[in-house]
Length: 104
Image (spheres, rainbow, N blue to C red):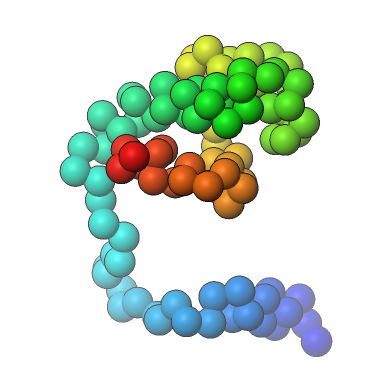
């Protein structure tokens, strides 16, 4: 089995219920104010980490496999994570997605 075929099978197995979209169609809804969301996300991320990890720098480092500096910057609200870190948090922390999206 070729690499391309294996890759396409993996995608099919991961998301078999996702229908194909036509050219130019976007199924995702755009947030009402994307700029506002981007500005507030580091603060919401920091608040989530403070609440869930009780501001424990080492636990955040261990949980996300990041440097001390990165964990400290997150806690200070200086920056926010890239997608994979946010996805991991949403998968592991109950209510994280709603909170980060501003619904909670």
